[in-house]
Figure 1 (tube, rainbow, N blue to C red):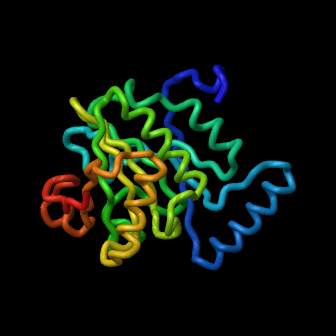
Figure 2: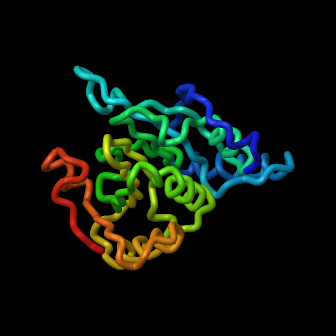
Length: 217
């Protein structure tokens, strides 16, 4: 990223949506991929979208979840990413998420309802670097069992920032542990760095994203 790309600008909401059956989605993805290639661009394996959530008193969490922007190519990603504020300048209790097309950053979304998330906590002074590494790994489809990964989330807190990787199936221990190792490898975390895993079903039961998580090391 050059100096121009690194400038930190304000996030500007841009809401979009979509739908359709799985076969229609596959057909559209094939057409999209071919169109991007013909245009001389570098298409991504998945269409992705940035979302943000800023908790507002009296408003349901779901209604606070807003889509920022979608992209389908490497070039489109950099245009979007370079216009996003970095973690250090985001307000407290804001979530910034990056998910595959058609998946909302909600526990109840059909793609997420049987899944869970790996939780990684960082001091605020270093969270920005790890968030960027996580974003690049997800956009580049670098995680092992990447088809099981739904999206990633940055949660801004007072004394720390929390990074999460959401996956589809919380009952497949092999995939969960392989994903943990892949995250640690791409973020270059020490072997002893503590990561926690929590199924979304457990979050729905105790109404908490991070309390009572499973410690996995």
